[in-house]
Amino acid sequence: MSHSHRVTRRRFLAGAAAGGATLLIASPRVFGANDRPSVGVVGCGGRGTSHVGWAKKSGADVIAVSDPDIGHMGGAAKKAGGDCKQYQDFRKLLADKSIDAVVFGTPNHWHALGTILACQAGKDVYVEKPASHSVWEGRKMVEAARKYKRMVQIGTQQRSDPAYITLREKLDKKQLGAVQWVHSLWYAHRGSIGKTEGPQKVPEGVDYSLWCGPRDTVPLRRKRFHYDWHWFWDYGNGDMGNRVIHTIDDVHHVLRIGEDVPVRMMGCGGRFKYNDDANTPNTEFIVMDWKVPIIFGSRNLPFIDPKTGKAKGTSVYTRFGRSFRFTNLVKCEGGFFAVSRGGGGVYDNDGKQIEKIKGDGGAGHMGNWIQAVKSRNHQDLRGDVLGGHLSSVMLHTGNISCRIGEPVGVGQVASAVKGNAEAEETWKQTLDHLKQNGVDLAKERPILGPWLTFDPKTERFTGDHAAKANTLVKESYRAPFVIPDEV
Image 1 (cartoon, rainbow, N blue to C red):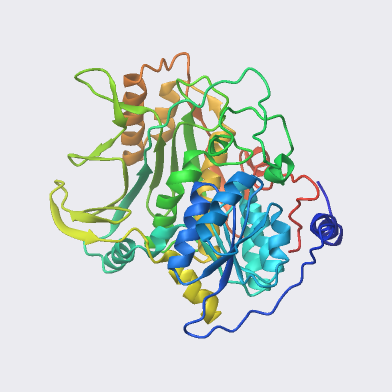
Image 2: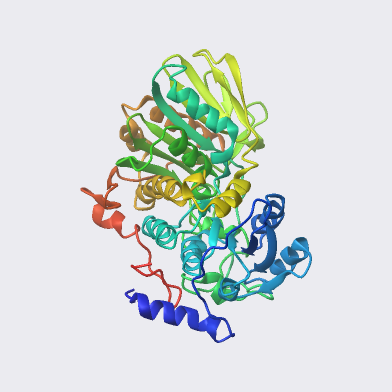
């Protein structure tokens, strides 16, 4: 879809202008030490409504909320209190000159366009993870933030968790020697979302066209309108982009990867056992070649108790005599680190804990953003948009491999990971996990993605399978909800 910058902005903003709103790029307000920025919250589901409270606790005043669902919007406005303004169309919120900054708790497919428009309107931005829905639009977010000198923080709050700051320092000092490999995972038991027999009714009070935004307004095919959008590629990025993006970002942070993102990656997974409307994997792992091997993992099928054969909570990954559901395993010569949100530990090679690492879950992350809004220095941000974009690149490139993959036999997966000891162990435990859940892998074959080569300078794939992979680097957008080439 090709649109010029001029046409795109005129057409998109026309909807807001028709309602009496005019967007102007404002100069940043100068704040005193005790001043509280005025914030608008866009996207008022569970996460967005939580942002109302966090913003107030972090030193801001929430004076406006927006959501295509007027019920969600009303609930968030009640939590904000006072005379909180409500705008079903967030473009009118962006036109409100009394608002200094915007918090986006929208579905993933709105993150980039919302952030870019807010920057153009002179607003600072806190946007939920993952930063972007695709590689290309993430770079546009960075360009907009820098061009308009906006403070754009990504909601990967573990960047502000003292546990990860401590881990990075310990890795810098090589407390356990050189890093050998990293395995980051977040398993979460999630059941099937069900199978619809036809288009579903859009909930009362929802502006469906506005909710879809950049995506086509296709008939609704999911029973639960909210949240279950995560499991559709058009709107979400699966649990890799919902939960595991936190640990992906942790790895980018603690290993100081910066713009030196991995250039070779492979994804494997599938939506096993569930015959439902979703199309993202419920089991997936990504293998990346970097200076050291990096593996990311997600599972949604349950742990099966070997004694009873019954489902019992969330699956686990077993290593060094310990079981993990959510952690970053950083294996070094002299032992390993296992750090999760809120803390973790240092272990020897036998799995014995030799030191604790304390954290707070990143409680100060939004507060850090508020301080940067006042300082006007994006280097003060712990979760600056550039780092968030680059960790999202790691998410997207691995997911792209899986998305363009083909069903294969289990032996072909084993061959693809051969020579990478931790990847071999990951596949072995994944295979056991699927079999314990009664998955017949002769009938439900895993999807094995090809090994892809990525160029960090152009942010496109090269070499084998590049043509197919590059079709997913940049998405198509529905007018007028189009991200222009020049932001």
